[in-house]
Length: 183
Image 1 (tube, rainbow, N blue to C red):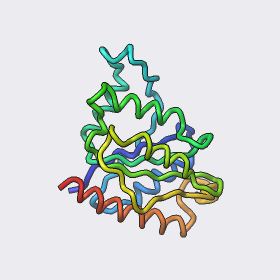
Image 2: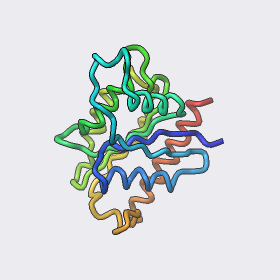
Image 3: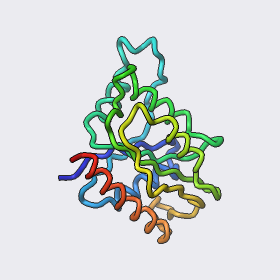
Image 4: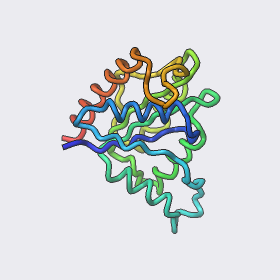
């Protein structure tokens, strides 16, 4: 049996590094994990006034997360934090109060940046936001992918062998974490 993992891409740019990383992770995933790469286009802005009759895009995202065995965030860093589209999706999926779709779901975080810090601030902000609305967060290995700009070829395929090893190491740890949390 493969565990279904909603893999949330924190950028909506068509050629985003986060999307490329998420797709690479999906291809490298062991047989025990099925990574469902999920982009955030079409998720309307959270507005508490709509909670009584939530839009269909909110319900679809919530349902997808609720039916999963875990969540993996793959995010860039914008202005030393997570992108607004990602925060919006977290707000949508974690409401209404006390009924977070993330509740009990084990979570992983992979951040990335073409710069030298690998999106560490974005990852740390997710680590601040998520407790209380999700299940356990994988603590080790922490994965901040720096210098990501030259990691993919023209067709978006992973070309940097050293990155492949880092992603495989993360996936092995994440698979063991998911297995343990879903017993």
